[in-house]
Length: 241
Image 1 (spheres, one colour):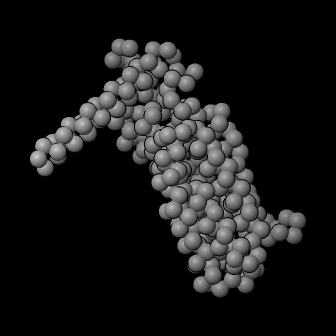
Image 2 (tube, helix red, strand yellow):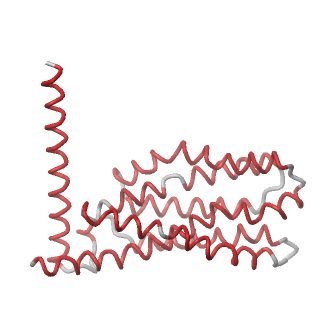
Image 3 (cartoon, one colour):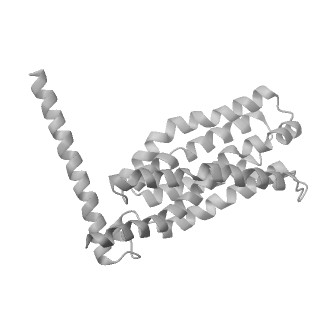
């Protein structure tokens, strides 16, 4: 591939993948923080003390920390597409289940499971980006992906405010908030299976020359990294000797 065509290939990959990953991260962030919007009505309806609510909010991060690294390893060693899809479907279901809690124990369990379900998403996506972007393009791709955080804040507040005002079927708005913000994760998880290829070689939307070029570029980077690590290890052994 001529050098003049290479930036266009990178842009094509970015437009195809980053917009979708950006959308997924918005959904992830909304499902992570929707408890803060529901908190006032939720604690009043369930008679939760500030201690119960605070503990439930914090338990999320215990599950998140325990399963964050295993989730990222699965992305690298198994299938990024399948792992990301599984994470989305699982955390979407758990988010919906939060709407059903009635006791502190149920609340704690749901929050722990939500943290465990969502744990591998962020590091998994960062690993996935290494399957598609060269080192020189990777930081920009990651930055565009994480730009979803402020966008989610802009979207999340008015969306939560609107949902909290509904009262459908005798359910208060705070319960509907978890249901309506959990369902998109399940839907997008199913879409992920068909939309995200694991590697450039599987991308039918790239031309043959484009697939070959990015595959060779990434393979060259991996080989250079392995060689560098081997030389570094050899130097350490020589120093010890």
